[in-house]
Image 1 (cartoon, one colour):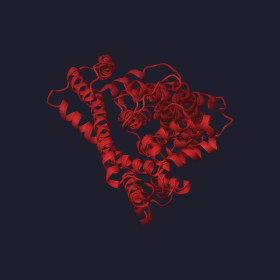
Image 2 (cartoon, one colour):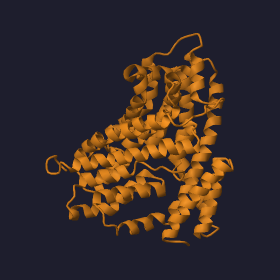
Image 3 (spheres, one colour):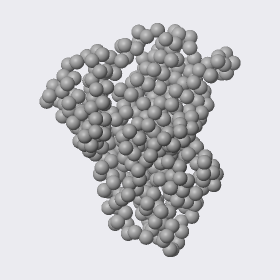
Image 4 (cartoon, helix red, strand yellow):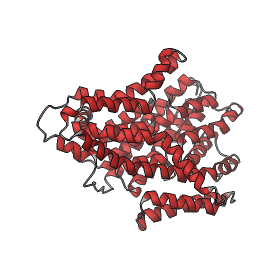
Amino acid sequence: MLSGNLLILIFFLSLAFLFFLILKVKLEPFLSLIAVALLTGLIIGMPASEVPGIIVSGFGNTLAGVGILIGLGVIFGQFLAASGAIEKIAQSILKVFGKEKSPAGLSLTGATVGIPVYFDAAFVILTGLIKSLSRKTGISIVSFVTALGVGLIVSHSMIAPTPGPLVVAENTSADLGLFIVYGLICAIPATLVGGYFYGMFIGRRVTQQQDPEQGLAETAAAVEEVEGPTISTGLSYAILTLPIVLILLNTITDLVAGGTGLATVFGFIGDKNVALFISVIVAVIVLPKYIKESNQTLYSQAINTAGSILLITGAGGGFGAVINESGIGDHLIQTMQNWSIPVILLAFIFSQILRASLGSTTVALVTTSSIIGPMVAELGVSPVLVGLAICAGGVGLSLPNDSGFWVVSRFSKLSVPDTLRAWTLGGFVAGVSALVMVFVLSLFSGILPGI
């Protein structure tokens, strides 16, 4: 089996071949991902009899985490859009932020929601706003995808109580309260720079083709022409935020009343899959009077959409599993431990490279903090600053070996190149912006508590 720098070379060649199959050969992404995963495993030198099992395991593990969520999320979004709820929420955002600043509003909304809610769940729940806002404002869909996606991933990577930042704070022995406060200070500018400013920049330079047959925007547009009762803004927000509130209540009760019966109850209904299921049932009961189409029609449309998303997302997980099994993470760890650079920058680079190569923010944060955390005391550097640098490194460079890449691409109906421009590079810009904020905080060493 190959080892050392050859693993890195194979990783980049496999990505190049994947892009070639999708962009030039026009092969379906699901088939392209499976083909590249098989070839990569064989070229690396994995036993031929084990490669299919590794891919199947990665496929299954990915769908175990997001499969039910995607199915429920598509149905939930279909009902919200058809009832006009998405339109009402979009109108309220426009009233607060105005047409030109609406991507900033969506980005900050994503950053707020992303604190208690996992990235994939939050993106699925809020994705209907993207097309509705784009249609109302005339601003490119790419700008809104960048705004929402970056806002969510920044808070997912940098602000506790999401698992990654919690583990980083623990492994670096940073004070959790200060870690949250300074995480917010770094996350807000990063969200605006990577989500709003970069999103507006790239949106003006990308021509996005609308899907003529599918998409929540078209469904929502038809709602305006339907005679009958009109859903209120309050009810629209209540339905949209129901799963978010249930998940948040789970987090709060676990922190303040862990181990009690109340925590057990909210632990069940606040599970992301159960919370979204409850919300779908509520939507199915409450929203039909605002909808022209039959429930069965909406179910069929949602299931047709979900099938493609599930296959491609699972295949992305299979490809990622082959890369992880290759040992590239261990090789990168050994290589970077010998680099003679400032520890804050090393922490960022370490985390960023693992994020790109392994396809998981949480894995990158946990791995990096496990290696660098024990060194912090000896190096005399603030644990908070090192921890935040690690978190900043986990923000960007999501590639096709990351199942989240395909969730963003498929739900937003962006091509692979547009997803790279909006989501991958937008996250990178946000991560670097967060790192800059970490260095700014370091200038106040000895003045600010914990710095």
